[in-house]
Length: 137
Image (cartoon, rainbow, N blue to C red; front, top):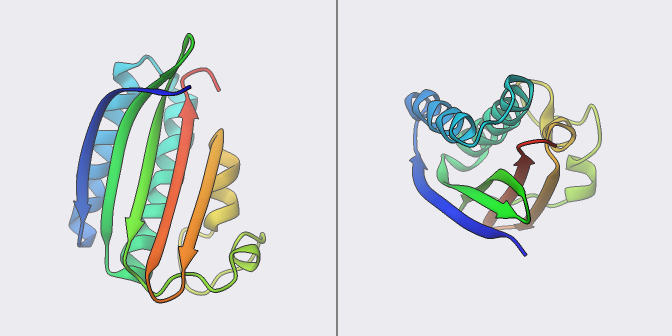
């Protein structure tokens, strides 16, 4: 069972919201003692997902949570948008697939950088992506 220790919500509506968002994620990661390598992986994945949200859905909301499971602490980020949705999640999760110009790592790259990755999307309603990076993961 995962226990939420701390949480914060940030609206992402424009490009200028990305840096404060990245800084907040880093702040939480530092607070739990996450290694620099894991911080970098988390922030890289978060950057890709937040840019996707801006590009395809004109922004959205990100829930930032410090979570605990047993002795393990981690960061859970939930990206929610009201964009067009993803018609074919399996295709979107394939390496090399891109429907636009992004960092190039895409959804599968973001998934590889974190410990847990979940995506739900309904065409015409929006997409929710949840990632978890454990402190020692």
